[in-house]
Length: 76
Image (cartoon, rainbow, N blue to C red; front, top):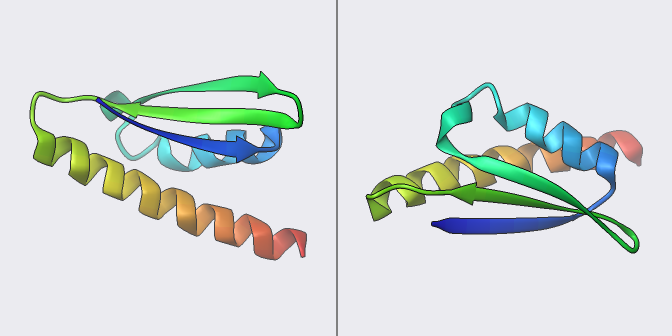
């Protein structure tokens, strides 16, 4: 299993998840946890094959990065 954590505001975390759910919702699971200054978004990818975990995580991270950058540009 591989895990990635992102910390920020709930509305951005929800937008990030919405951006990756249509691709392959069965390839990962996620949790949004409240913390002092916002939330932590944790994404979990599991498979019996390391290559599949890596490919899925690479796809998710690329998508999240693009969406986060776009949201940042809209806020500025």
